[in-house]
Image (cartoon, rainbow, N blue to C red; front, side):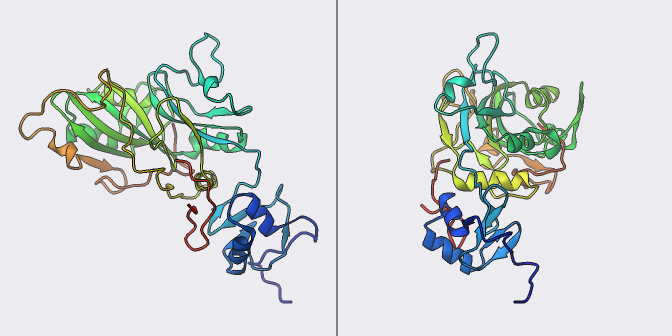
Length: 333
């Protein structure tokens, strides 16, 4: 048999059959997993496997299906929480304030990935995967975060340009990756901002610096994971595709954002009357920018493009349980 450096060669005849490992990881049935192997859609340790009966060591080998890494350790837990207002980003607050422990009672020894300040709501990941959590939270890996900020006043294109081009704060310069006006009224604006920084209260300080204090802030996305329709205080387990996307980001690769959980409208920043829209009546000609797409600019395209999945090398701040479709790599429904 001719040696092929692109083909995986098992260490020994011991181990677990690859199709069984894939089925246990939730990819699909064993029969479908066998088809994926025969079609050359599976790689072990970066090398293609096409032979049925191949055995691997789940504790040491890595498996990718259609380019999507699998989490073979079934003891790992990955959760998405919509952190409510007034909750401290700690599993146990020494001052007795409301903390994250109340949302993880069903799960053993999970901890939060990064932090949100007490006044900020939105997406916070919880996990017991220490290695992945370190990569996702560490500034050097530059995982992007997307926020919706409700700010005072009608923001101008000039202010958006300043946020993109960079401003100087007391702890150094900072710039956003993307800023987009979502809605506007005479006294408030709703703005989407994407950045990689994890500095303390960085979004609030950036808008304060351009003269628009934040009055409501929600994190909509962390890397490739979206908040979706989760209500404040709700927790859900990440889907297989979402976990795979996180593993991709942790490996320094671009990851597509898995499709939303459903078609519900996303949550807006909290406000006293609870409807999430800027107050005030727009004057003729005002506010229409936001409702029709708004001012928008990004570092990459200068017109609002760019990716928010994140990756290594930059400075930094929904539940389907199906497997991987053999044809397009998406979740089976």
